[in-house]
Image (tube, rainbow, N blue to C red):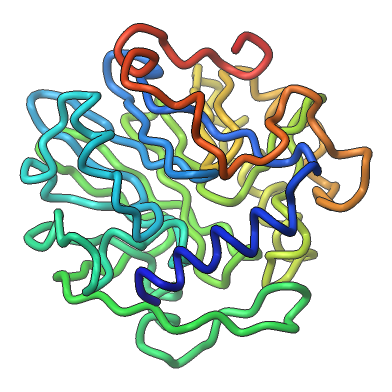
Length: 288
């Protein structure tokens, strides 16, 4: 991957999904005092802050406005020492690529040991029902490889790693301080509830559905309040909404799955502004 790959994906995905009312990312801003978000076209990067430490979840596209938008949130890129990657797709790892601005060159990257096989070239990422191979991602950062169920303590921040294969073979979600679940590309929120993520982009859709079912069971047994935060479609604290259609795939070219409040073209960022980032909290699904 490289800057040109991010730019090419923006052009192709914008053309492909324009008018489908599928992409509904959060804008740049804050969910609450701990979680901030930067919007990059249709993808969201999240920052979790506690006790003076900020952990980054996913690294977005290879995107030239990242430092600018982090400034809207008063987050210094140099302060980021820990980056947790849900999976290695273009829109989740771009800021780590060698031809990026290298804002986080000294940060440690945490990624699942299975997902790391994409980075080493042992496995190739396939999309569009396996018809297309994506370029191999390169990064030079120090990496820590994660296992399913592993729990880390990062300066007093508890991070639990949960494997949810399907979208990619080694996709991880992260449960932070038992209160915030960062789901990456595991759940897709439509207007009427959550679905398994976009069918056209999964390595194995049946496995993705099975993983989402297992994730719900895991969380339900804990019986704790939880904010469920997605990579492309916002957040909710209602698990019934989040998992309402967990056994059904979001099929992006079928009208049933459109969200009337989603933009015509999610890759147009005109509504993402510094004023909004500083003054408007990011409401949950149904209250935005």
